[in-house]
Image 1 (cartoon, rainbow, N blue to C red):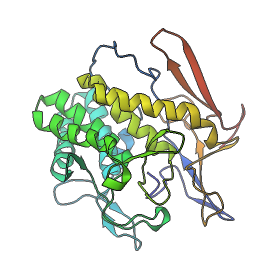
Image 2: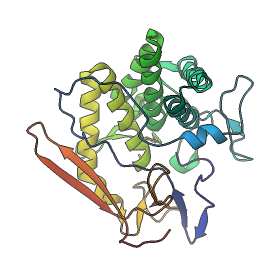
Image 3: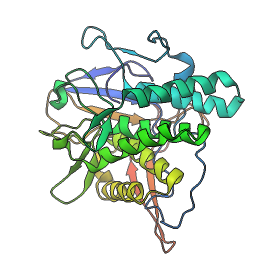
Length: 314
């Protein structure tokens, strides 16, 4: 999520531009445009390695739930994305070690996601309780990134415990992807008919933040893998079609755009992609991101985001 401290280093200020170094963007699972005949499978480690986040988070409430200190701007807040990252990091640590402490930490945060889900008619959301003027958002507001990552947490909690409350909460969160921004949901359909899941659900100017959109897709795919939900699969595939058609718009050659808002506003956020710690030569730059598609007939294609050249340095 764009808010909060940069985990890969300090922000670099240049005229009208803030450059963010991003350490853990790994492009989508290779089963894009998922086949309806795929059998449901167990969820394993998350797609991005958040184990260091889980180990090193240093601010908690009295119940041990991670909190984020935004300083004088927003103060200390619950940040659903940060809580999800810590939960998923603990999940991976539990799978790696089998130590019950990581299991307990993971389930404690899964319980927070159930307890904190806010009902909105036919769906549920996790809310941010501060204004965010950059994207014209007034508190409270949801986020497709939080919705997707929260679903990924709850799906794993259900798989681990078979406790129906986790599946019920995940199902309510899933329904937010069927609700438009105007109703408090997280989905925007543009004039070309492409479906966007908005990290920042601004009705005035939907920004189409790339990493938040991808994280939302992870959650949809996890729900489908766990349950076989036709709704989750349809939502996932609609998002994949949007990526296939629009990924090139983020391509600035050496940099990638963070969002697609007007580039000459007060700030422009850019990404420089480097590998996460699961990959060799950590951290080294990524010069190409490929989105692979496998159709129901078995045909395979890809859309590429070229963001540098061989031998780039960060």
